[in-house]
Amino acid sequence: MNCKQTQFNCPVEAALSLISGKYKPLILWHLIDQSLHYMELQRLIPKATPKMLSGQLHDLENCGMVHREVIPEKPPKTIYSLTEFGRSVIPILDALCQWGKGYLDGLDVQSPCCKG
Amino acid sequence: MNCKQTQFNCPVEAALSLISGKYKPLILWHLIDQSLHYMELQRLIPKATPKMLSGQLHDLENCGMVHREVIPEKPPKTIYSLTEFGRSVIPILDALCQWGKGYLDGLDVQSPCCKG
DNA sequence: CCGTATCCAGTGAGATACTG
DNA sequence: CAGTATCTCACTGGATACGG
Image 1 (cartoon, each protein chain N blue to C red):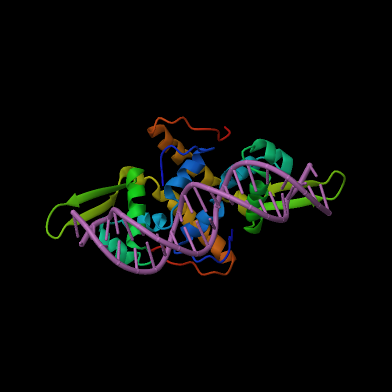
Image 2 (cartoon, each protein chain N blue to C red):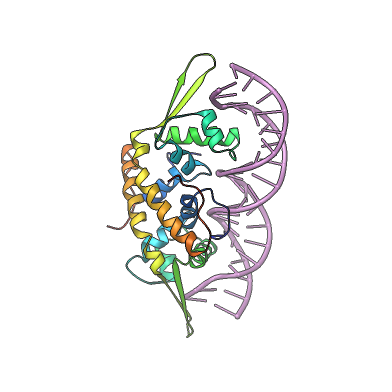
């Protein structure tokens, strides 16, 4: 995926391209109130394969939404956290969550997860 | 596309599934302050092929965001307009637009369109 | 522990032509 | 005018196995 330089018709499309991706909303959600290691994310999002998880994390890092810090020790550690820019999207995710819940309720589908 | 019954991990994903689609944000945007005929939409979004445009419109109709009214006369007319539910997403589109603009500005890319 | 490499299936979307 | 049909290709994402 390229977060940069696809041609968009509208800033909305640019915004959607940054947060659209199979596990991106979930990753961002989990990082809201804590930094996490790769394995912790993997455990929190078991359906994501390692390839998918690392791919989505790289996308988010390239877009400047997630910070990746490698701690060189044994065993190696990598810490993922939200950047300021990443934090700035939280209110929008929250709005999308509320709106999505309303939609699912209307379909009589009970809404999954979303901590809190 | 199916707006219903894909399994989502989070209401955010459900919400994104409703507005993600090549021309959906643009269609919604154009319908904010006016009802439009098919041809008018086609003229406003020239890059969309007829297949794509009618497909996206059907998706939006199935999700309950767009109302389609056929007026049987010669020549036939079809009027597309936003439903109440469709209107309820406007504030979110607006937030996405502002956030996307901020992102594009940071890349020194001038933001396209978005009327007003 | 933290990923990458390879292969493969399903879907999204463009080009083009045609219909009630 | 308002679409549908077909054909094609690129991209997303899953399964599995391997590497620093």
